[in-house]
Length: 175
Image (cartoon, rainbow, N blue to C red):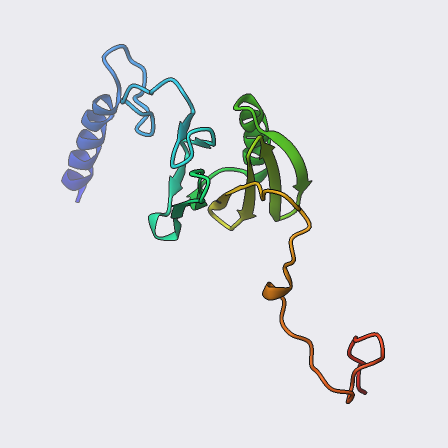
């Protein structure tokens, strides 16, 4: 039994220098040995919407098309291990650097940023998960002409008839 412990101690003593670099410092196994591109951002489907390198695109959630005016529009989903507040601040700063103007901001566990550029809007929905933060990027063209578009086609129809409806067209609550 004593011989077993001597061999174990000898192996441990010999294994310690193997984890050290030649100058006596320890090698960090989590440090990247690949040269970085120099920029912490890349541009995915939209050439003026910077996405942090720490975010990965979820290809199955991406839909890109072109508007009749020729503008590229659509939605992309990204996910990564970033703090939602840091991501929100980075997106605000870098979108401004690319000519976007922040028009609206809602901040919570599910935050929304709305940016405007000459002929487009970019809406970013950020969701804070347990491990990952999701970033959903919507880019759409600006509507031409009347901005008060009728969206009643997208609203669910109200029940018709006099039963349960008031004179103002709103449904009464039953008890």
